[in-house]
Picture 1 (cartoon, one colour):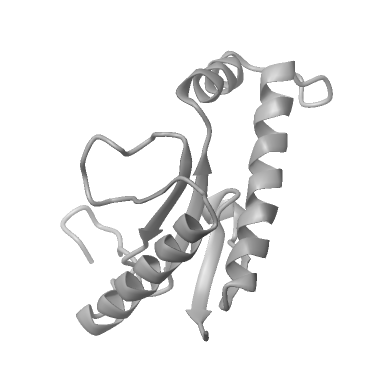
Picture 2 (cartoon, rainbow, N blue to C red; picture 1 turned 90 degrees about the vertical axis):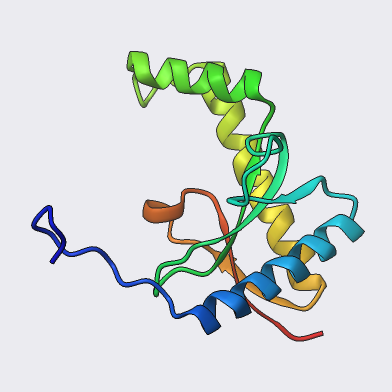
Length: 140
């Protein structure tokens, strides 16, 4: 237990994190070869949150390598602001519908591109990772 009285999920050992980092680099390379704007997330720097594919390593034992699509800040902000204000789920505003369509299309494109490049990929757990792609392995 932690000092706050609840258990935190275990982190992956250093050798697993090193393997995930290598896999993340391979995924970045494959996406860049396809012409997709891509960067490593979680490493700091001013490129975080910029549009394009963001590849990051989840350090939890059950985590892995994840690829998420970021839209331009204007669309992301519009969708978030609408959601924060409350919306009818049966009559979503255009900005939210458009944002969700982009996320679904780009997830499918990333799945296809990475699979074609030799990666074992699947949709990540939506509850935990939203519309991210889970990169599980690579075999060229």
